[in-house]
Image 1 (tube, helix red, strand yellow):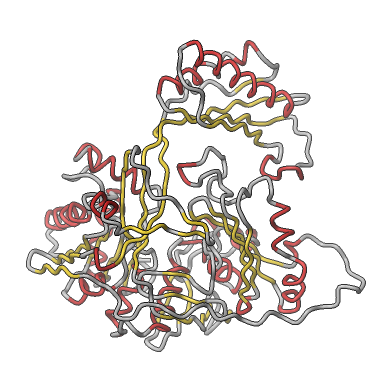
Image 2 (spheres, rainbow, N blue to C red):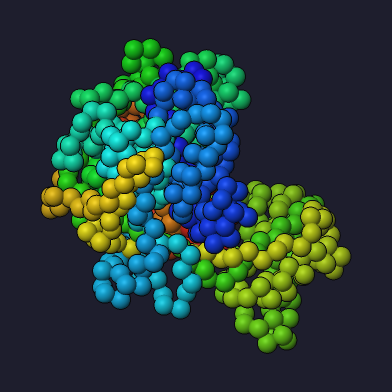
Length: 570
């Protein structure tokens, strides 16, 4: 991007929901983990991105906006300034501070200033009082980033903010969009949503993977990162640098639009509520690998920030064994059950509590397909994971894995990497806090500091307006059964313990059939081995898509899950 992208802004998103807890631990350990003075920020950005590229970035006058500040944006700012100064560069660095509410958490909770966060109508409980909170961060918006740019920052680091805010902030600054230009803010936010996962919109994680893998200019070995060209009137074009691998097509962009969303008519962000149900795409707009995106709509935001918090909840471990030969799956089930049984007896002898949770998965046997598994493999991986309140309980289990190769089924191998070690079990939960209780500070260089509250002047009141469904089709005609992949693109993703599956008709004539045949009930039945909550369907006629939201489907999600697939990819 820096060398060949002809870009004005370089944007980087480093923070997954579980990352904040890990960075909080780094911050508490100081320079030993941060690598540059204080810890708690993403030092990889400082060393692997900024340091090798800073001279070229300054030479080309590219501005940089990243959330690599993590739990300590001011320390990240200082690290960038130090490296730049040592290289003889005069770089004006800004940072946004205020998302970290750990010190205010008890006051906010005790004074009733926190509200429960709801997912598909089901409210999440607030953090239990007996748990150790690791991080407590509000998702901030784009306005503080725009303010830093207005005051001369060339590099801006933030802590937790909405991923799309990293892109929307520069657009507000460049085009002078106001806080009430909701359709324009929606367009910028959608562009940010398309960009935020990098190569996922240039052929990565794409249904027709061979097209991307075998594309020109080296394919996956030279995948091009995405570029979005924005216009003041809200038009945008998705593309990538010339002479790079990957592809930018109607399908790659449509798949990224449905990635990790719930209700597409009410995509709630700090600065706007985005509705992209009627967004349309035009391929080869002005040339190959260029997709025009139109039709995003917005309305006033809510009065709240979402809070992303993590807390410590004991320890966990996962162990794997390769089991081969006749009846490999059956042997794996028996071995896993026996290891857990022996471990439980030893826990009882040591007067330790039972495991809080256990999970046996037979990988290679189509485990993720549930009852629809249709193979009799001769080689599988037995994966056993356990959750316990103490390291001592975890270690008992760890000692019982390797001996199974001598004491249990034939064909056990692959246990030579040593005993697995206990790791902290981190849970994630969400909450809401009124924006009026979250003052945000913007620092630029050594001579600009501003602190204010970014509460919206107008709170959202309007509900979601229904979009018409396609006319019903006649199902009483002769049909041919084909795999769904021949008719549709698809992409799945996660947010906490919720998975979403976006199914996109390849041709307009397929969409009415999908709407009539691919129902909530059918999808729920197909994934019943995963879904412990509800399945809800949303229609997106603009890109001929159906989005299914499956709650309580990932075993807790993120670091809270013992599943091999904790991110909804299977």
